[in-house]
Length: 107
Image (tube, rainbow, N blue to C red; front, side, top):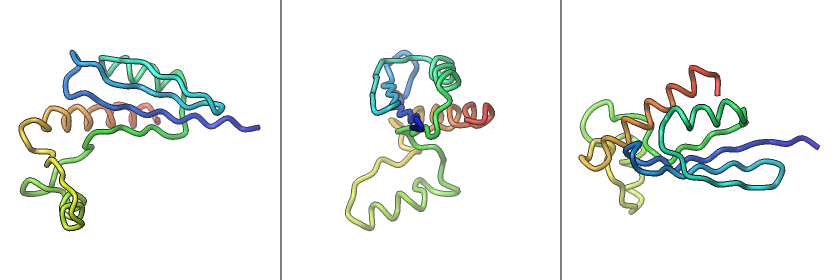
């Protein structure tokens, strides 16, 4: 049987706050709290998952405050926090940096 690993990260806006980290492997899930981006990258590198899901904006709008996807969600009646909103900006920047770090390691 093939074991597919999936990682989920509920990223905090700042490393001093805990981020949730979950690993699904062989139909078992393990969770833990992590803090630094380095810790997240190290765990992902060790596990080599097929998929990493990061619960954070991973891009900024080309112009204005909303990305195309944000506008579509609003059009469908959902509420979103723009990634440029003061409370979201540090999370957005951290998410972009983390995703970039993971991509450079082919994860």
